[in-house]
Length: 434
Image 1 (cartoon, rainbow, N blue to C red):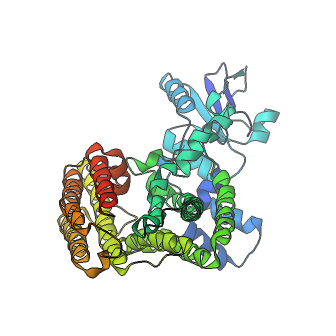
Image 2 (image 1 turned 60 degrees about the vertical axis):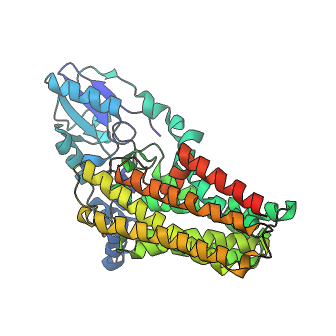
């Protein structure tokens, strides 16, 4: 990446490179992912294949200039100089329309071409003396692609969800090295597959995320990770997932493929469909349990499958409730990339509570059935799980209602101390019942 150019002239003029200086991202990629579906449709309808046609279409893309990731240090210096009466020009070698729009949005005086600046010709100002001001944020671009940034972009913290692949091993009492080894490999495969899907989702949601109070801090939305790097990482992650899946079994790879296809469909369309997104999220969570059973070669209990569907439906509804309630508290409008309204909060909360109670009912029926006899020597102890389940679901609903829960209730269960104690108590009860 070229060094950002910020020059000061005796005529009180600042000249700033748009890419590599003011902008923390790539303008080409910003144009492409401003509305990827619309861009592809325009390119396909243009009938003029080739880079020239693509460049022309991207040049006419609709970019939200107000929410682009600008270098704060460079922008603050420019605005401070502007307040003192200095003239400010951007240097841009391509996408002149976007560069001019950015300059107009920021209140700058215009745009100059790099060739004109180098030759000192056709400039709207007196070139005068040049003082070079470096921008450490762009010069040390490697700092923005550190392990910490990658971990943030890949959502390593979300890997907690993939521990669901261990559930069939535990519930089937297959507590041996071989089973845990297969489950661990399944965990790694799902984690790589999910990270690739997260990157793709963040690319598709780039514009919406930048208008979100918390999602605007994501690595791609904030410009911490180059879009081109994310595009390179996605196929690499999915290739690793395929290789790991083949090492387990072709059937497991099929389940992993179903998960990936559903995730892509969710990112492209399903998440924008009211309640369809809830069912899809619940299905994706449950699919992790199915994959765990396939990976270790155990038969999945229909009780566990039904219980999981109700649990994850409730959690998905709580997730939507948290997102909408957060927007309500911040005084924001209805989300543009979801088919929900803030006025839906009450019905979403009611549905989340109903799904949670159905999960507890299903578990009670399971404990009352003959299916527990072959697996547990003291099945009566499992009744102690009911009050713990009621407590945890009730607490999750209350915390979401109080706007004190992050937008993902599964991660909340790992971070919230009372929830960790409740989950640990459930595990101890299950072990004691064996």
